[in-house]
Image (cartoon, rainbow, N blue to C red):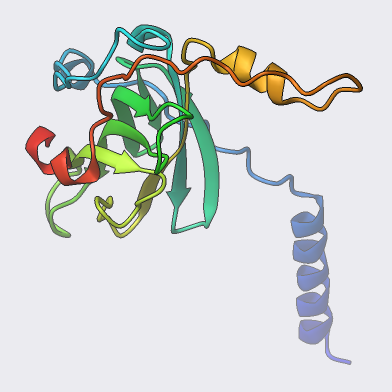
Length: 202
């Protein structure tokens, strides 16, 4: 075997050893800082019924966020007035609402804004651009959708309670004794924003 071939084989072996011994690259830290101009921008004022049930400031919305590039989804829990950044997307929550359990059909909604760091074209610099602002509905996802090639956002829940709701659940639980009496009829609440009225708030 020629000296040149032996040298090439030795060099290839050293490169292979170096590749095997090299450590995997450190994961890139997730970007969570919200730019000042976005954090200072006021959220839309949305009219909701705040006199019945959990006060608006204490409600907790659970939103789903999907990155279509890597097919990774996660849940985001937010209170009205909060914003959350995950790398190149910012989600802001203005309000969340659901119908009382004695109303049909059930409806759960959240007023959100979705802001994405995008390039308008290959030559432009990336800039923050609002791609959605309005109501999203769990039971009617087709009414309003986040139209973006990379990110999707949807409503999963709005955690809030209504007067008498917990007592009604306890009464309906099975027990060894006699069946519990039906709860008293609650006062008629104001209507939750309907999907048809969503366009007026956007």
